[in-house]
Length: 334
Image (cartoon, rainbow, N blue to C red; front, side, top):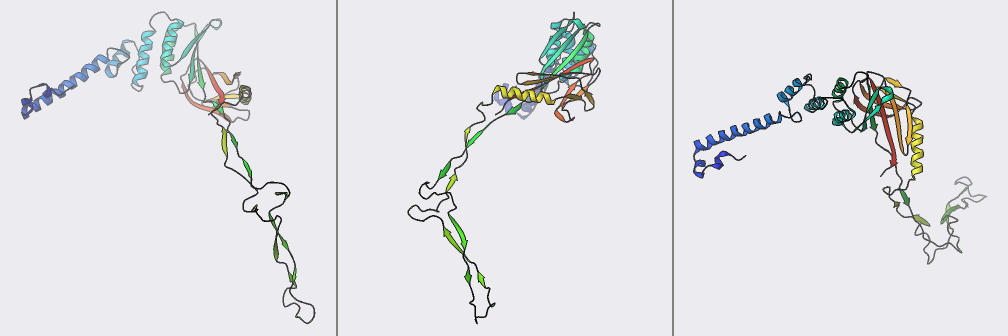
């Protein structure tokens, strides 16, 4: 918004009292506009905050919890509004979709349904609110399973090929170059004293200085000025961004990874031995049921020795039945 003084004739700007009066009016009008925008935002639960959000919560019987973020509280209100009426699969899907990509599966023989959250890389915020709303809306005779699929970062394999070229500085042939070193040191013995009246013992009887023995003749070929052979700088002939690993090898790797996983652990202290493993193409899938009423904050997969293979911080509120699914993709990396 422009300052009000700019809307008046120019001679008002030259008057200090008029300029100050219009400045104060401008501040008040701007404040009024902000108040108007804030008040209008309270009319919709998707934009409400502060006192307006509290009114929406009170109207729908939701306990006011100011420790939660405005986003979580809005999700609660919206879920409650959308949950009014008969509970159906579509209605549950709409409610749960506010928290991420979901599927809702009917498990009629078990008198239950399952809410499957797909491909979660990070903990889902505000899920405890959804659990509370679903428990309130679902028929009392139905059980609800919550299934969370945590997709781990891919195990990547890559290949890069290098090449070096060997350069020979001399040609093989009559000289049979390379079979021996270019030169060797050979010793010969010299006598320092003669037998007789020559003061034997004044010097060592003999010593053996070394003489250089050349194995090849120098000449127009300037042998020895360069090493017999050398390798040039290493070069890349196949970049790792080019696919070269066969799908069968990736599938075999996925099978091996699956064979190493023998148990799971929740919250660092709840061991789960009963797990289901499956290899789908090049993806390892591990599924298991968590004990009733467990708030899940940390999950791990372990090998036979009890060593941690994968681990992740998560958040899943306490539910009657919670199914966790891990997906570990095996792919060729860059």
